[in-house]
Image (cartoon, rainbow over all chains, first blue to last red; front, side):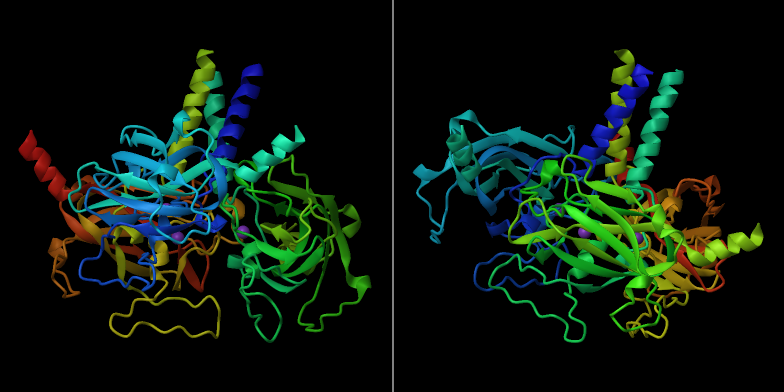
Length: 209
Length: 209
Length: 209
Ligand SMILES: [K+]
Ligand SMILES: [K+]
Ligand SMILES: [K+]
C-alpha cells in the first residue's frame, strides 16, 4: 500500500511537470510572455523557391518567434537558419538574474531527420535597457553558458548558467551555434528558454530580509 | 509483479486523463464545441497604449473566447478583465443539467505572477433559449456554485454544483468574481469549463427505463 | 527501492511517449511535415447555412488538413465529411515503405457524441510520383489495411500494414470508410497517421551492410 501511494505520487508529480510546459520552470524568453527575437543570422527557406519578405525595419523574419513558443512534440515547429552556424538575439520579458538555459529539439521518436539540430552552442547575455544601439560594449556581456546539444539525451536539455556570470542582471541574450549535427544546408531551432528570477524581486527580498 | 501491473495501470489511467483535456470530463463551455462569451465586464489591455476595437454590435472582445479554450500550460493564454472584480456571461453549447464547474489558472511553476488570479467567485445559470433580452427574470436564475480559487491547490479546480440548484436545465451561465489574488489593475481568466449532461439525453433515459 | 525505480522508469517512458505526439512514432502524413490532403468526398458543413468556398482548382477544402494535425484531446479538431461513407486521398511527405496506420478519434471522456466516428475502413496506397493524372492503374495500388475503428478501445488505434503489401514503395494513400458509428449526416476524421520508413534510407542501409 505504501508502494502504491508512492507510485501514484510519482505519476502525479511527473504529469503535473509535463503539463506545466514540460519542465515546470518559468521561461523569460517565452513569446507569449512578451519576449521577442530581435536579430538573427540568415533564415533558411524550407520551401525552396518561395520567397519570404522580411519586415523592412529590423530584418526579423515573421516566423522567428516560433523558437520562443512550445512545440508540443510536433516536427516542423521550429525556425530554420541557413548553414551549420549562426546566431539569434532575444529580448527577454524582463530584467532577470539568469539561472539556466534550455535548448529543445524535436524528439528522436517522431523526427524525420535530426541532422539539423544545433551542436556546439554558446549563450551570452547583457543589459540592453533602452539603448537601441545594436553594438554593445563587449565588457558588459556575460558568457552565460557553453554546451553541446546531445542527440542521445532528452529532447529538452537544460544547462546551468556559469558561476563566472556572477549575478549580473540581463534583459537580452545571444545564442551562437558554431556547428550542427550534420545538415550542410540549415540548422533548426525548436525552442530556447531562459530561466531565472526577476532582478527587482531580488532587491525586494534584500530589503525585506 | 502485481505491483508492477498496478504501477503501469496508474500511469496509463493518469496519462489518458491528462491527454483527454486534462480532466477527462465533457466541457459544455468549450469554444470549439460551439459555446461563446456573450457579455463581459471591461477588458484590460495588456499592451498599454494599444487600442483594441470592440465588435460594434455586442461589445464582446475578439479575444474573449480565449477563456473557453485549452491553455496547454502556457502563461498568457488568458483573457484579462479590468480591476479585481467583474463578470463573464457564456452561452453554452447545448441545454444541460449542470454538475460541476472548473476554473483554471496558469500553474504556479511556470507563472511570472499569479496575483491576477480570480479569488472569490460565484456562478449562476439559467435557460436563455431564444430570448434575446439580456435582462432575465432573476427568479429563473439558479445559483450554481460559490467558491474561492486557492493558489496553493492544483491549477484546474473543480467545484460541484450546489444541490439547491436541483436539476434545472440551463444554456447560459454567468461567472462573477468579487476579488482577485492581489493585482489592482486586472484579473486574468485562463479557462472556465461547465460539466454536466444534456437535458434531452436525460429525458431519453427516462423513457428507456 | 527496486520497485520504486521501476515505477519511476515506467512513468518517464510513458510521459516521454505521450509528449512525442502521443505514440512516439514518425508520421509521414503530418501536415507540418509536408503531407497534404489532395482529394476527398463531399465535406459536411457543421455550421448549417454558412457556405464555404472550395479552392477552385482542386476542390480541396481549406480545413481538410485538420486531419493531418494533432488534436490535443479537443472535441471539434476534425474534418467532417458528408454521410456515413466517403474517402480521403493524402500525398505523403516522402516515398516510404509503409508499416502501420493510426486512426484517431476524440476520447470518449470528453466527447459530446461519438456517432460520427468512422467504423469500417480500408487503406490503399501507391506511388503517384509526378504523375498528375488522378486515375491510377489499380494494379499499382496496394491494399495496406482493412479494419474496424472500435469505440471501446483507446482513441488512437494503430493497425499494421498487411504482409500482402510486401515492401512496396508508396507516396500517396487513400482512406475509404464504408460505415460510421451511427450519424446519418456526417463522419468526422480527427487524425490519420502513416508510419513507415523512407525508401532511400532502406537502399542506403542495403549499401552500407
Ligand atoms: K516551437
Ligand atoms: K485558455
Ligand atoms: K486534428
